[in-house]
Image (tube, rainbow, N blue to C red; front, top):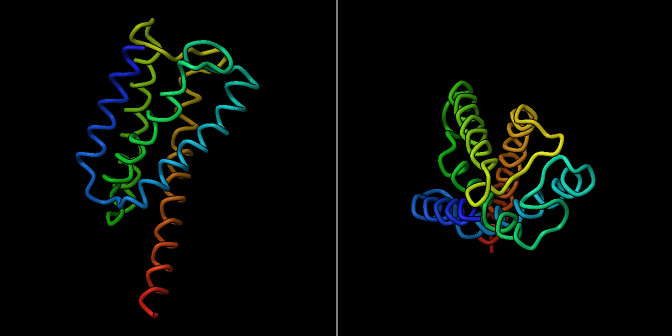
Length: 160
């Protein structure tokens, strides 16, 4: 539990102190999307198929902070620093660096308690190496959709 608390505090502090791109509206969208998407993913992978879990198998009160406050600031950091105006090589390199960093962090979460809080069933690290880039691309798609919606709304307001 100590590792989870440290990670939540650290990720949130860094995310909110270094944010220069994301508006409050975008942060709210991102936070809500991340929690909802993580719940859907974990419902299938964790609860139904027992591939991995936080602390104990099944629904666990101790895992709530991981579900609510761990991944949203990580996604904020990813989007805040994403090289939107760079070429495809930079974007792919950025994605690869993030995937490697997430995999290293995942290995740390597998440490015994009190530092670790994550456990594998049949899941393996290389599954995460395949799935994480896809999840980051989904996040990027969602963020771009939010930007289009905001621009559409602002255009509409400016016409009034």
